[in-house]
Image (cartoon, rainbow, N blue to C red):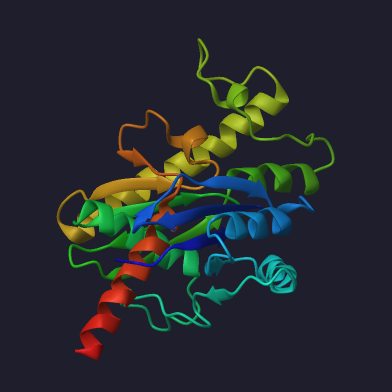
Length: 263
């Protein structure tokens, strides 16, 4: 059984944390990286998880600047931090040419998805960027595709043109209306980028299924996953805590490896 610990997943814009207690992953909490109180809130969560001292912390990050700042602040608070890729390996087999360059979140999402599905799966992470990756029936990560996220596309439309406005991705811009046509410029932009992401994902699902010879389980995560894929006919599960689930699965596998090596 994995020891009690605090898992911290740092994304490009948000940080998600959850405790492991009694070997079980507890409900998560989400914080904004731009909030100056985030590091203190993480330290408080670590201190609150154990009497007489802080919980050990296992951290994964795709945002090096935020991770380094948090580590510095947490070190001052007396919290011990271990980091995937630097202190702790990610126990995932890959077919990549160089797996040292792949994002830790992609590998952990793949591990989290496979630990739940126990079969081949396609893993979509819809956040600042969109990744669509394939994991085979043995849990091997084959790689995938990286594309701009929906908000990044909206930002690019505004920044690279003289007339298109700044628009935030929001449910009301994506909600289906009586016609498929955007009736305002912001709505047209939002429908365009959401359609681009969904169209990309649907195309890749078909291509990956053709490669594999069957349609794998399709699992989505990320800050925009529910907004873009709720009710989608091809996306079977939306799992907000997928990276944390993968971190927990990695900790369990590493614990088992340590136990075997000690025998």
